[in-house]
Amino acid sequence: AFALVLYYINHQEYPGPALTLTLVIVLIGLVMGAVGYGIAWLRGPGTQRVIELVLAGLDLKGTERILDAGSEGGQLGLAAARKLKSGKVIALGDMAGNEAAREIARNEGLADRIRFEPADWKRLSYPDGNFDCVIGSDLLGRLGTEAQRKSAVHELCRVLKPGGTLILHETSDQSALR
Image (tube, rainbow, N blue to C red):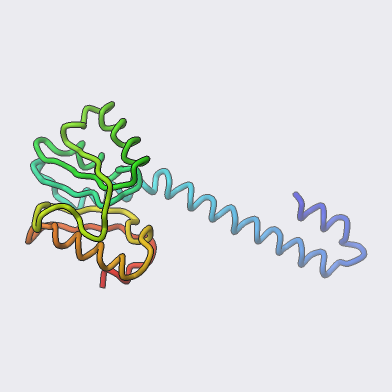
């Protein structure tokens, strides 16, 4: 609407620039709308789709030990815990996210299948080969330097059992995976 008002006010005196300015403002509005839609999709149905794809790649039997390596709010870990019978999930995250996810786990009766812990990416506190599966979403983008990202990937591989499954969904810098 703003672009149309500008065009209407200026189109007779400055027809060329008025049209150009109007088109630029409309284009900026369209780009901002597309970005907003993309963010909304990633926070809503996009997140659910990522969870479905990651879990489909695990081929869970229900008895696995799974490490959720810091998905936002423990969403991957919670979804994995819903599919387990006797297996366990440890979900790593920040204090606020862990508390909110803990409450969800209690409300859904999952507290016996999932535990939430803070993450120390310098050295995970688990022994070598401790997990059947390691999963995560947008973990590397939240770590500072490339060295920190490489260290985190090394730690995730260290705690994964030989022949285990590692699935990291990343939308940002993936150089640490090389």
